[in-house]
Image 1 (cartoon, one colour):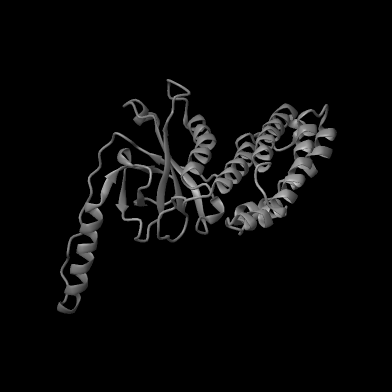
Image 2 (spheres, rainbow, N blue to C red):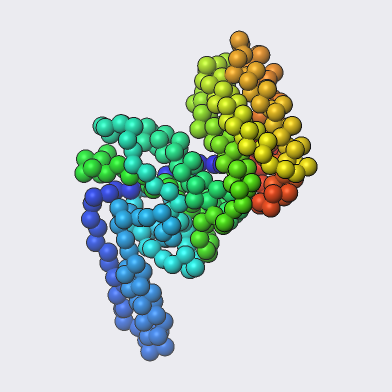
Length: 294
């Protein structure tokens, strides 16, 4: 799953909201002006502080892209909207404000895990919906703000309906929990250095985390029947063995030899048949397809 740059919330700071005023207009324009003013008033009435966001809230931000956000427009989920809050948590890892980079790192690590609890099948999300988050700023931290709100947000345009996961069968839950954990382990442990030579210990740690997640995933798959699930299980066993080899590599060359089949072994495209057999979404998200396409 791809983690996008966050919105920043300036919590604890009030802001004035200006109502749209009806200017001088010709008679033929009065109706349009009145309608516009009504829409503006409706939007203002729906404004809520980012402090009060709750899981499940559908909303439209008042800013575009990255930046500080104070108020958002809360709307019914059956109306077109830009984002939905799918998880929230308190930062407890530190007591002093650690800086924007560290706060973002915490959100990067925890938001995917928490969001998966609300919408476990990320393949079923609308197109171009990505994970964003609201985080404390240095200023809001001083007021006691520790909250992170994780949202699925459409970067352009809007979508309709709630992203809450539909009722899932036990085998679907088991599969998704295991599969999500594998990819979470991959991306949450991605080293900052671009090459293995520059950070072999970091890449080995990532491989170890993925191998461990695969072992748990395989344990869950053992209890699921189906020909395609069986094929996927055998494929992932081979991938897990390669991730273990990468985790124990003595040097960069040995790591690379194991990493190539390990990485291709968890290619999401290779899970489509099993997902279809389980009745899950089968369209690989564009960002994941791009990564494994090379």
